[in-house]
Amino acid sequence: MFDQGSGPPIVVVQPLQGRWQWMRRFLDALSAQCRVISYTLCGDIGSEGCPDAPRDFDRYVRQLENVIEHAHVDRFALCGISFGGTVALRYTARHPGRITHLVIQSSPGPGWRASAEQNRYVSNPVLTLPGFLWAAFGRLRVELRAGLPRPWERFAFVARAGLTALRYPPMPHTMANRVRLMEAVDLAQDASLVSAPTLIVTGEPGIERVVPVESTKRYLAYIPHSRYEMIDNAGHTVSLVQPERLARITCEFINANRS
Image (cartoon, rainbow, N blue to C red):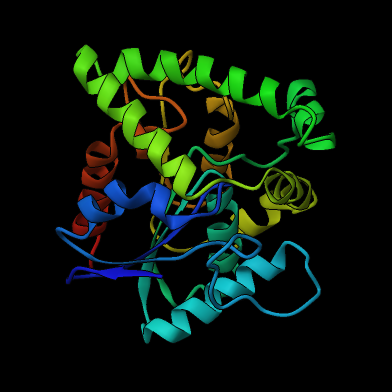
């Protein structure tokens, strides 16, 4: 579990890969202005606060509640990245009095379904892993060129990411299961119950190639008083490639809307 910094508390829910260590630079950047709490999702090595069965989507919501109880926070901001955004959304819908702010970054929106390509990976995550990694590397190259124009910056990122992947390898079957569970959730219903100030963040169309920007922006139609910010020269993994930019936007939103 990650718990660092001081100031207004914010809990960060991880994307599909599940391990908070992948987001270390983003969490460190946030902790310059906030108390930042994050954790590893159920099903991954080192996860904490995992409830017993049933192992449905709401298991992740119950895990989030357990982490919050362990951290002894009452009211807090909540930031969910990709898959984590759907978990954060559902928690906010069920506990409106506890959430001061909600930030959703590049998360599938109401009505989202996996594409044909994504369905191939999800249906057989081990056999299709080489193809998945090759496609992911192609998408990442586009993001790196846009977000890190200097070659040495791109080299440093790839080196760090490679070491992180070796030390904290993602689990394909677990990631695939999360996609299937997410597809069954009524995101529109959850979004309509959110009352906290909400920021919807995406990368730039054409660079964001995992979750369509228009899918994430659908939350604006359901969440009252929500607002949108696009990060230019960024894609789906802005929290990895340009963590300081996402942290700055998140902290500015929280501090500007504190009551």
